[in-house]
Each structure stands twice: as C-alpha cells, then as structure tokens.
Image (cartoon, rainbow, N blue to C red):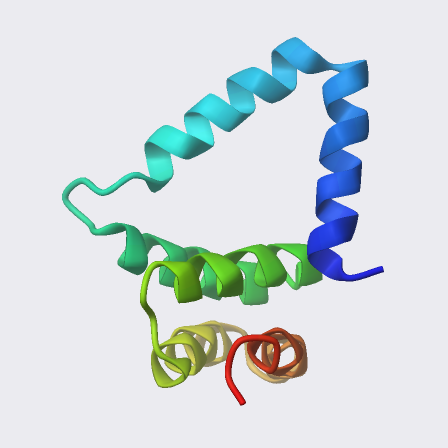
Length: 108
C-alpha cells in the first residue's frame, strides 16, 4: 500500500475510534497550514524538512504532495529536504531516498 493510502486508512480508523480528538487535531492543522505571514508553499516545504528530520516516511509523503500541490518545484522540495540533513547528518540523508520515491510520483 502506498504511504498516502496507509495514512488515509489509519486516519479513517482513528476517525471511527476517536472522532472528537481527530477533528480537533485536523482543525488545528488546517489553521496552522493556511497562508498567513508565511505562504502555504513555504509551510509545506518546512513540514517536509521536519518530516525528514524526524524520519517519518508518512510525513514525507504527505508533505511532498502538499508541496507539489502548493506549486513547489522538484528543486525546491529537494533543497528543503536537504536542510534536515544539514542539521541531522547521515541518518537524515538516508531519508532523501523516501523523498525521491515520493517525487517520482509527481516529476518524471
């Protein structure tokens, strides 16, 4: 199963088991990701970098898609991902493979 499908399936299960908590969390995320002082594109690139930093394959998938949907180029996405490597070194560098796997779905 693709990472985005896995995330969607888990969220569906969680919505059944803990709807109030998930709805509250989703509302917070929606507000935090909306354009404000920083535009949505910038926020998704930041979240992508954090996904790499925290070594979260599912977060990477979600925020590569979010970055693409917000108009980011492949170069912008890779550069954002590399910022996690700057701070985290080799272990973070290995998660660039996950970024490439996700990028290949949007850029040929």
